Image 1 (cartoon, rainbow, N blue to C red):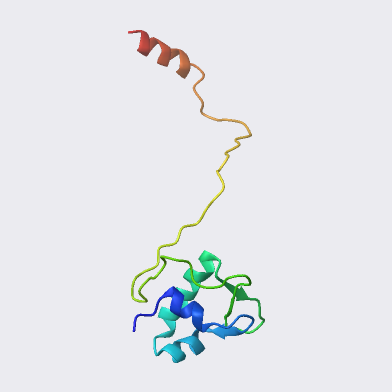
Image 2 (cartoon, helix red, strand yellow):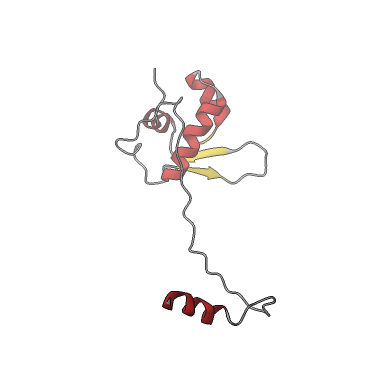
Length: 114
């Protein structure tokens, strides 16, 4: 049986917390494979990571999610591609410039005139 996002999400009851180890044992898969699928579901917003003080990361089905997103059936052995959105970087340079040639612009202008 192929372990997909939909199968994993359907096995999770709303309001109950699961560890990757518990789900891996239930499906007979390795913990790493299940953890990758869970993290992909977290990125999609279908599963939330529960904040706990223990070293075991627990996952919970997100509220309002009825089932896995349509068309998203990844094989557990396939790598899951993720991307991170970042804000545009604005560079502000302040301070004193050293070793700056003040005549560089005039020389560049003369080169383009030739």
